Length: 223
Image 1 (cartoon, rainbow, N blue to C red):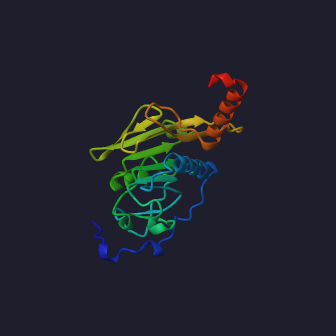
Image 2: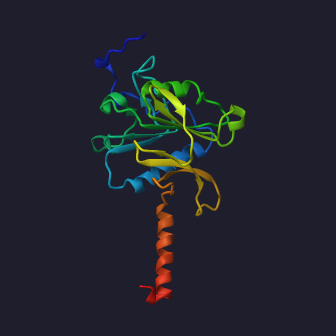
Image 3: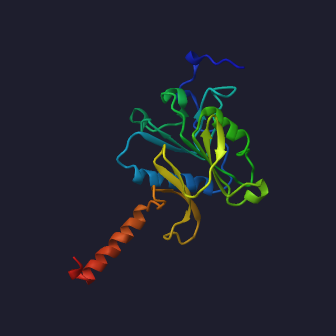
């Protein structure tokens, strides 16, 4: 087994932010960033989390600490929201108190990327608690489900059931939906509360408030 000298590990300033592999389709940018946008709203008063999209995770469980794994999205809890008050170029585990992401997301595209084999094994070795694979188009080809959540139990990943799937260690559920405000009717991934209710976007909340105010204006005695 390769031995890595922990004293000579590179700093984040020396490491690129990703592997420079272009995404296969626009959803690989849109969906993870939408999850980040929603989380910014849901956890707006919290500073102990970080969500990265298409960003390299550098670790010491592979053959070189200079070769990252780059999920479409990942969530870490218990870290600084902004590392040292600045934005991150990459996520370097040995600079994050050895905190590995608690959730990683891979989106399967036309170009198959070993999401069910090699990447799963990397995240298992890293100790990522939840591994989400979203495969809306090619799940029949790959003989899997369109949406799968794997949970690390006793060192191995076990496929979970139920959607949205509740993750108590995170305090969030994750699942699929179509936003009623989206005229394109795109299926997305979203966060859910313990009762399985989807967290609304700021736009949806504004529309509900406006409707409520109109109702009160039309029915002043309702107060």
